[in-house]
Length: 212
Figure 1: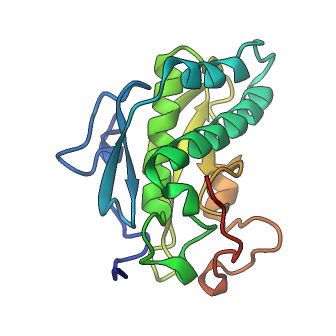
Figure 2: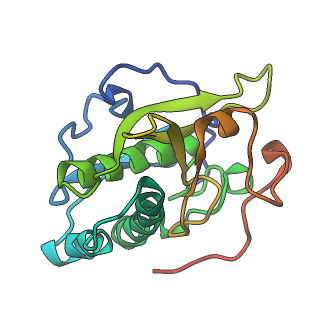
């Protein structure tokens, strides 16, 4: 069944990542053994997920060798988020999620930028709580656009503990299981899009479907 839902609505933020728990029925202390993910646009639906120890160990393995600097840790974060999306996608049916949103909005299992930013923040929170992130802290999500200056778009955000610079961890521009883009927040706020994407308002998702 097709569902008409708003795309990337602006949501109020609160300190300490409370902005990621936009529904009263969300698990606010996510652990690999039990956490929620959002899907179907603006967190219209929730799915409870429980990873096995062996699955979470695959995430730990990515960070097994200590990162010598924040840049290398960001590369590992890309791998870890992509792996989380693959594992969660198989458990929830969100493996069908396509890059961006517009052509596939309303299809079961599709994620918009609100879903993506919340889920990514939850994944990062579990990694941080497990001691996997040494060089970064997690910030509240950020939104650019506000209609007047472009289409609203929301992303997860991390901060380099040493330089204090903020970086976006943007999963919305890729299909489920693809590595997110991590770029400086200032660059992203200036309208950055991945090479070849251009104006996101006029780009649809990719046509090739992925199975579990």
